[in-house]
Length: 430
Image (tube, rainbow, N blue to C red; front, side, top):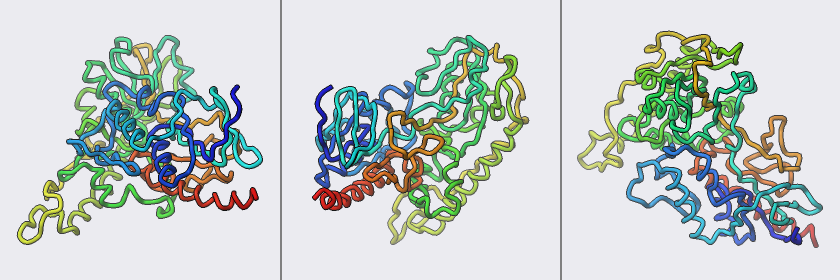
């Protein structure tokens, strides 16, 4: 193994969060190195299905010192377009990335950290873990009870319907990933069953604008954990049910297209999948959350005259595309025939897609900063271990922390915190 090299700061991961951190450190003249197990933006290259598009519009792809300037600010990037976008960003400030370097271990030393990789070792005063929140597919333990021979796949390995064997497909999960894959399978002519868990229903567009434009205007995406009455509940919020196709995609649409909807999958018994009788309750709860969000948008639009398209004389319209009338969105629960089947014979299915979320994974992190679930304990990305930071965590501080658009806020905060440590370290060393 080559000799150990010293560097002030090591950033682990060259995705959007790691690059945002690198840009902030560069701006503060902090010597650093970005280690990436594959190529820049590797997960965006290899862990998305072929038709994948971002859920956030292009104008929300903002990074420190960088913003979308293309011809379609309201469009949604493909994974390939995002990779090119991030590569261009990295080149813009000559990000010091060492690609194809897998981190094997990070542990504390006397004055900092030892970062061991398959291409050498580095000592560093600071380490920023920017590998992302979404690292490991969350598959329920009962998946091992399903009939042998039934193909089981997670979204990071799913590419297109043709990759699955012919026959019906059970999609478990109804947030953005689950409904998009189910929609694609229906388009390919596959019989589809969707086991519906908790989700947050949203229209893609509302009153003429993307719903995320409204949430950005409302300040919803920028609300911090400290501002919420129940932070623990906020951390458990179901994921958004959105599509990057630019159109609304929800359970009503899947139902009308022929998908069979049922409740949350509970397990498998003698070759049968078992489901909870909670479909109507889950969808009703999602409808309540939807109404709450839309009501806030309506109130904001009504109290913001520059958004009113009827105001023309002497008052320039800030966004003339905002519609005066709020569209009617029927409750999903009202169109469902019931809670769906309680059991289904899995021997009649060709595949199961586990769209049941993702989990963090840090098997190489040998520093006692993980809780019993493997999540990094932190306050705004600052851990209890001096000089060890994390970036891109769910609700790290703001609600949009896991969005590309949100990383810039946390990266700037951590870069400032890290920079303030430098005089203290200097004094300690003297």
